[in-house]
Length: 424
Image (tube, rainbow, N blue to C red; front, side):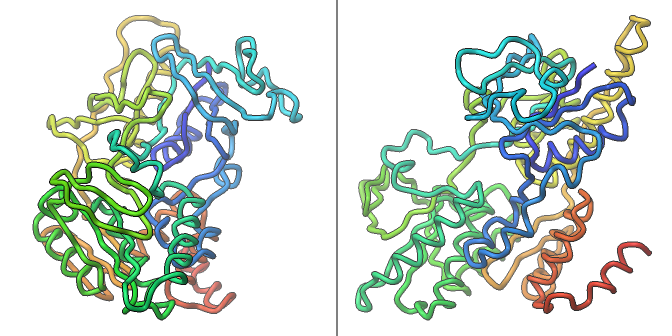
């Protein structure tokens, strides 16, 4: 029996690690990911200001998975009813890299080099979400998203070029479209980078949001604290501003007003993976989409046991993965038993927020229960959550390096104490 996990983001990696221990030994576990690595997405904005951090927030799947077979390929299509995924291996023809193609690929390769079909008995779609440009004319062509390491590197390079070419009399304007947590964080990093480069007075970072508030899906006291922190760190916030289109030097709003810019970063929303035709299907609380296919994390619009929509977030994806792992293991055991009869009862997922965290330049905002924190307490909590997550997926060295980077430890210092704390 083959169980396939498509994608290795927060949901996919957590699910795969759970399944490694929950599945019977004779079940084959395959993880398909486009580059065979896991990105700690909530720290990606940091790379804009500190490129060296990229090494700490990318984890090689082979280092943290024990029994799973990792296949590097892009999932281009999913036939969830038939249990078949189409994979594009790029220029690599499966079966020519020294691996046993028969263990993971079933079906004849198509005419396209490196494309195969993978059949599965139980599959989990954990492909995350892509940037949504809402068909706004010119926005995708003239902006940079923030989903991958190379995006962060491009944002940094474009920013430094814009600052270097700026006019001391006319400030360089950098616009970030979308004031969800990703937009808030990258705007904060760009404002801090302007200060690092000695260009604070000659650079203007503008954060746009079409809703009435920043962080529009979050509690009001958290929203207020985020806006206060942004403004304290020299980010100009404009809410109620809906973008209609963009060209290479200006944005036009729906009221026909325009705003000139030197750089545009777009974090304005999410859509489903291309493998799902850009859709995020609605999925019930068991995470089971249809037959043997589950959808976990941002790839779907999850409805929890209370009938409430679950927000797209890392904490939700990680906890959904735990429920999905138990349910998949039960289905596999039922199929292997060969006894027939009714399928086992599946668990439901209920969303209960652990709190919210967002970093803004050298500051941060945290909400724990009804309490909202700013300053060093929030920043320390943000760092500890990032390091704790890396440790939880087996990337302890990355966690140590992340903490070292955040608190300024010299290389090698305090390693012994950190290692001791991990083992006690």
